[in-house]
Amino acid sequence: MKFLDLAKVYIRSGAGGGGCVSFRREKYIEYGGPDGGDGGKGGSVWAEVVDGLNTLIDFRYQQHFFAKNGQPGRGQQRTGKDGDEIVLRVPVGTEILDEDEETVICDLTEVGQRVLLAKGGNGGFGNLHFKSATNQAPRRANPGQAGIDRTIWLRLKLIADVGLLGMPNAGKSTFLAATSNARPKIADYPFTTLHPNLGVVGVDNVEFVVADIPGLIEGAHEGRGIGDRFLGHVERCAVLLHLVDGTSETVADDYRTIIHELEAYGGELAEKPRITVLNKVDALDDEERELAKSELEEAVGGPVMTMSGVAHLGVTEVLRALRAQIDENRLRQKPVEESKSWQP
Image (cartoon, rainbow, N blue to C red; front, side, top):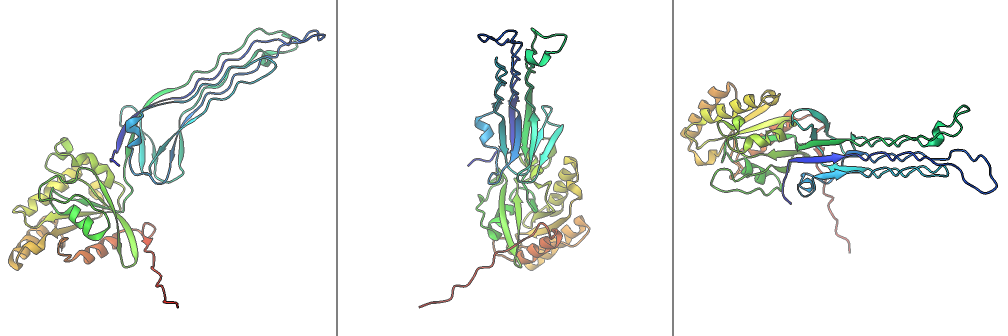
């Protein structure tokens, strides 16, 4: 299944049915009077969060959602049938934006949330509605209310506890593959990750979700590369894990580049708790490792952890540091495997 995190959708609610002008016509009944019914309501357009979805790929193949119109009223005081509503089923973490792509209509973060996007038009009154003591034979009826046309954008921001940041080839996908059952693409060239990947990581009998996004490069906030498109997926994270390639000759500059892009992106992303890790230390000797670590600590202005995702060096310590930064209500207890005792 392909990953899609942005979709443009055209919606229209149903128009209300018109009221009916009718009079009672039955044999042997004199002065039957008006009996025109009201029109039915038009269908509304809703958005609902459902479980089991993690992409907006369904909206790649269908972008138009038009609700049914209400049926007009009929004689014998019969009200028209209401139009069927339409429900857009979206994954958890979907933002609904107006046509300008800036105005947030709603932010759906829980399964079962439901929001009205376009209300159906009311049905018109039939002539029975206008009957009175002074107007016993009204010959007027109201037309139904028109529906609402809207163009909206759906933007998905994945719900994760930890977000991975770093330059291309910093070892983010390798770390995710080494700590979870996720199988992201791993290769020795940059931009192997083209879309976000999620993995469930376990440590000390608790589990949390880690999101891996494409690597950032200098000028990403201006549209260079592809990583800036996916920074929204780590906005909801409790902590950021910043991986720096220890084999790079410009360790400090690589760190500053990512921090600059976070600040230029805006929002509270740059203010989130962040753990900086010097990665790929298995490829360095002791002297090179200490030199790179001290250079990175000077740029960070604080302690830096060391790790190697390939050799599994320091991975557990990093996971425990991440766990300490995540709220208890986000953590999930790791299922305990029951030991099956032998029976004859």
